[in-house]
Image (cartoon, rainbow, N blue to C red; front, side, top):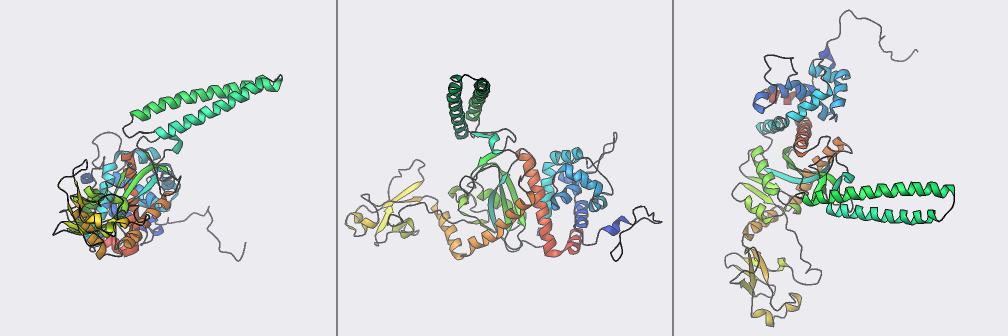
Length: 479
């Protein structure tokens, strides 16, 4: 063919072979992976095999295997089997490993056996970011998102699921029994074959019912009332959309508001965020090195005990209050209409009367004070808009001051929730897009934490490349 760009002849021998380094440009991210891993103290981080054995068959250095995984997660190749193939044909991996081609079992065992060390390597990259003064704004946003586990929804059982499936099996057996009775009344070869087939189906359903009853006993014995067969640590979790629950894990992330770097993360199999405010805030504070850190979160994190746990630590949570009262819909005053005076320890109602604290507390925890006015309520003209009870009572937690202080911080930051949404939700969307339909490939909570650390590390690497570029970042690592 003429007038086209022609390739080289595959059979043509060359006098001098090409240099492998010429195939990798100076701004290729694999050069950054090479420098970052080489600068790590793998022995201190706890990688197994960093010190070679005196006898036996030589092993791959953990630095080589870590480089392969970082390259794989950076390029959306998390599977050990796919990485094995890539080491044999991918010129960048050939350059990165020096033509080493470990098999998939070696790669899989490395990820399985070095979970804490891989998580420590992820934390070291955050230390690098702190060294480059990227956390000067001292504001982070935290959020949780549900990620799918390997476990299918049909392989996860709760008491409600077992009951529903038993009802379905019973209904199916009933339909087949009716069909079987109808077939028995017919005299033909077709009816006889149908009878045999229906009898086998009924026997199979009864075996299934026995298995479900046994599973129901396991569910009752489980501490949290759930049993997952494929991944024992995965849990059924509700999501925002109706009927869109999944079996997976709740991934927590704290993201820097200035550069959108993930400064801290964690994985839990608890489906809500109620107990994550203080732990994630303290992790983010330690990672950023900020003495005072403002933490933005949504209403799912509102928990008085968690807000109180942050007091005196330098973590300043900003979580909007949850409005659960239905008084506004009924045309009645809400809690926001009653103004609290901390100096005088009383509330002022919309009519201008003062509600004072009662002598005794009537709640079970003995931590809720009741404020009321026993005389003014009887003659108040606004009582029809206030309460249907004899006297209006306003409840106040004894540590409500920490919630009021948090609300004051939110009032001084009117764009706090907008900043939170723009900061923390984008990384979750990006990570899920990288992972594909099935988010996690590994099983059990410990291994999932390791896999998440690899994703977070490579996400931060990409963000730093966008901020600095490969060359300056390499120079920063070598300082």
